[in-house]
Amino acid sequence: MSAKRVTSRDQAGDAILDLFKHDTTQDAPVDPTQRLRVGIIGTGWIAAAHLQSYLAMPDVDVVAGADLVPGKADAFFKAHGLEGVRTYLSHKDMLDNEELDAVSVCTYNTTHAECTIYALEKGVHVLLEKLMTVTLDEAVAVCRAEKRSGKVLSIGFQPRFDPNMRKIKEIVQSGLLGEVYYIQTGGGRRKGIPVPFGTSFIEKDTAGIGAVGDIGCYSLDMVLNAIGYPKPLTVTGVTSAYFGTNPGYYRHHPEYAEKFGVDDFAAAFIRLEGGITVDFRIAWAMHMDTSGDTLILGTKGGLRIPSTECWNGTVGGAMKLYFDAAGSPMEAEVPILESPPSLFDLKIRTFLDAVKTGGPAPVPSSEILYNQAIIDAICKSSKLGREVEVVIPEID
Ligand SMILES: NC(=O)c1ccc[n+]([C@@H]2O[C@H](COP(=O)([O-])OP(=O)(O)OC[C@H]3O[C@@H](n4cnc5c(N)ncnc54)[C@H](O)[C@@H]3O)[C@@H](O)[C@H]2O)c1
Image (cartoon, rainbow, N blue to C red; front, side, top):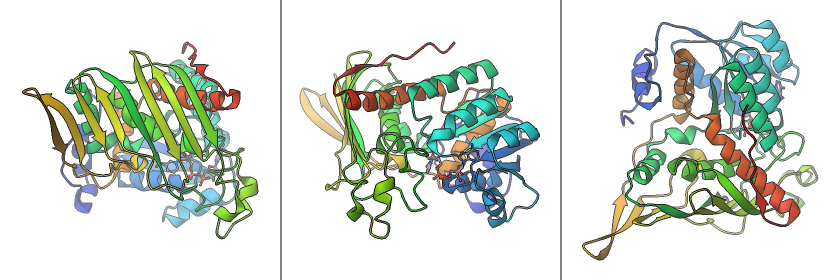
């Protein structure tokens, strides 16, 4: 990846397209003169980041938006100084009435699948926010719709574009670690149940799933992407909700405890194809400062990634490589690389380039399907109180 910084002057023009060429998986040339008509489904918190990135792109017209809450989409576009954007009260209304090239699906988790499938069926390319879906069944339905449509579907994992996250993959793929056989990963916040803008992350009807999906998907993606997404085989998992259900947790909104219908902690032991095991834990809240460093152990070397907030694309400090040389144990530091100012711009740009060239998607659903299968299996295992086999249906 280019370490060049994007200046605001660059962002005003075509230079932004050149900068992102290094970050796309496209081989085909991207036509900078082709304009794309984009719609946004769900105009809540994360939609603002999508809109700002689209507005920074010289080849995009944001022409429509939809939100179930009357007046919300209008207010959203007005707040961003946009006039003339047509608004609708549901994704269906918008997709039935607009000629769009692409949409961002920025709805809460429980409507990801229906919005994405409907858009793909209408022949529209989709950038779907993480987590992909709530359940594995939904993820499979989304992948099938993608396959039938032949359109681009990319999943919104912006940390993928961080140079430090990429370095992890480069190190593993270079063979320096030999054969990877064990990974410890996860993350946690001391007090970070996401309720700054209301309760859509904690109610069962809207979120469907808690920390295990919301931030667990990032921790899993960081390591599974590095090792090439081997197929998950079995999972023993537990989830709990000791903090979110406690009225004392919320300083100003004790009533949120009654609304809390998801998990705030999960731990799991995951077996992957190729004899790799993953020891995983994740927390929205816990009485601890960290749930530990990420460790990747291989037959020739090991990599320590200091406790990360990988959902922000950040690692907690310089990574360390452990290996033997000349018969002695050695260590080497992997310095932190400067991150680009907006991982979000990269997520949007690489998606748009994939739309223009017909793919592949920068963050493909075929990989995230395995991520989702693990999350689904953790929830099932926790309910059943035993290990479960991961069965992923064919995408036909
Ligand atoms: N990539 C990131 O860094 C990041 C950060 C935050 C949230 N997210 C993801 O973004 C998604 C949305 O999160 P948020 O915080 O913006 O939620 P939010 O609750 O603020 O906004 C979601 C909006 O979607 C609307 N909506 C739901 N179903 C709809 C439908 N069928 N048609 C039209 N509108 C519909 C809701 O009315 C709501 O206004 C979540 O899945 C979350 O995991 C990603």
